Amino acid sequence: MRNYEIMFIVNPNATEEEIDKINAQLEHIITSGGGTIGKIEKMGKRRLAYEVDKQREGYYVLFTILGNGDIIKECERRLRVMDAVIKYITVRTDEEVRRLEKIRSYRQKRAARRGSGKGAAAGPSAEEAMQ
Amino acid sequence: MKSAKEKRPAGQKQYYRRKKVCKFCVERIDSINYKDVKLLSQFVPERAKVMPRRISGVCSPHQRLLNDAIKKARNIALLPFTTE
Image (cartoon, rainbow over all chains, first blue to last red; front, side, top):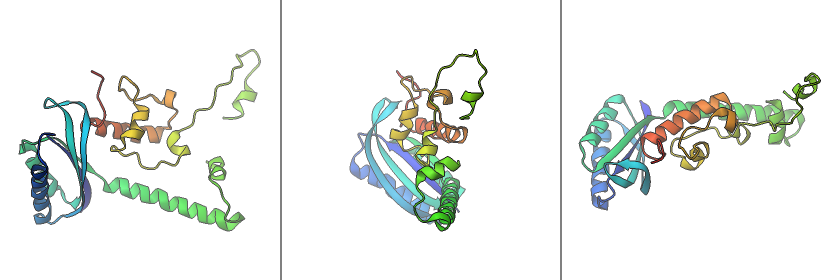
């Protein structure tokens, strides 16, 4: 199982109900495929950086999911055939999360070592000098 | 790096250039996310190209992450490929 983020842009002329319908469909695909949904975030209307399908604006929706490649494949297929969806992107995030955790634990270990060495007052400037 | 100024042989031009530092290292920004348009747009000048390292001073590992993030953001129309 891997973490993914699916972000897609819905036509700005679509109603709130239509967007909810799309979300419900995707939710169904993911849960029936054995994946879990972390969160569904409606990021709202935004200006697009360039024209897509003759639109200058778009309604952004972000899904954070835990699943496998088959679920992603099916989601992407569905997004492609939906007329209201003008663009989508899927990003795998588990590697990034692991990398961040590693950095965090490393920092903590360092801070702990320094803290025991010369008191708790180890400012960030001291750490900078070490690098 | 600091000692380079002292070691410079006589006769060479003596001008001082401020040492550029990597913004991500200094401010401890670990994640360079493609959704963070505000952060990424600092490294995308007017023509919408990726700002080169020699100008921004970003270190090589962070430049690589930044480059990936900018390219993802372009893909989903958060950042432009070029100006119209």
